Length: 92
Image (cartoon, helix red, strand yellow):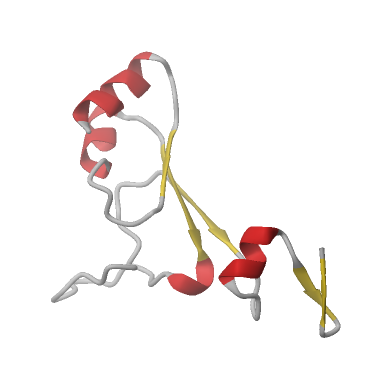
């Protein structure tokens, strides 16, 4: 992971991951590389203060930005396919 962060720093690249604990967060922070987490909003847990145990679907610190995908009432499959809910009907 350190090599990926180093290459990104040298080329002014941005790294995109799932927003969960991928392990690259600390290396990006050391090299000041932008790290963007992209995740479906209805499947993540926001970070907690002083957690006793870390959940698998909990967003991790170390990211410069997060993009949370989806709308209220939209399933992850619909959000991934680009479908939107409008007046009870699914439209693509």
